Amino acid sequence: MRCVQFKIEVSAEAGDSKAMASYLDGPDSDDDGKAPKAPVKVYTEAEVQAAKEAALALKGEGNEAFAASNFDEAAAKYTQALNALKGAGLPPDVLILLNRSASYLGLKRYVPALNDANIAAELDASNWKAHWRKGVALMAMSKRLFRSKQAVQAFEACLVCGTLPDAKVAEVQGELRKAQARLEQQEAETPPADLSKCAQA
Image (cartoon, rainbow, N blue to C red; front, side):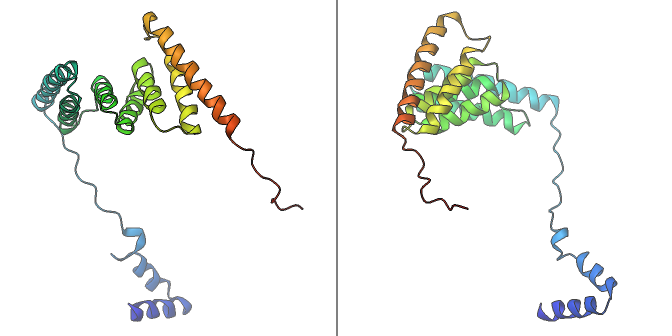
């Protein structure tokens, strides 16, 4: 390697641009380090339909497990359903994501519950359950100022969703007030930044 680098440097100093261009175009060049793109798999209609049917069946099994408070089994079934869709090149189903999020909440696994809710909200911002699950997960985690802020934002987003049932409005408003109260308390307890050590001009 030293020999090659030395020769290139000498050639460049000597004005031999052809040698430098040859070096840069070679297989070891940093500019040519991109891996070839894998061919995009095209799924047949039959494969897509089979995946949708499998996901629907697994979702049903997950719902049954969830109704029986078997949250581990429910989460596993919802994961299988999502994997079935992914295996056919299909996007994740928002309702299955939210059902798995609810299962994780039942298991007190708040991080994956929040992750599923976040993805669901990105896919369908009008779904009130996505914002609701986000807020609930954030409020259940260890208390941090940024989480309280995000929980307030989640409940506020939930309230403006046109899909939010009237029967749920009061509950969401109540959770929003709790999040706001926690946020106000945390902000009051947060000491102001110490600017005394800042360099002065």
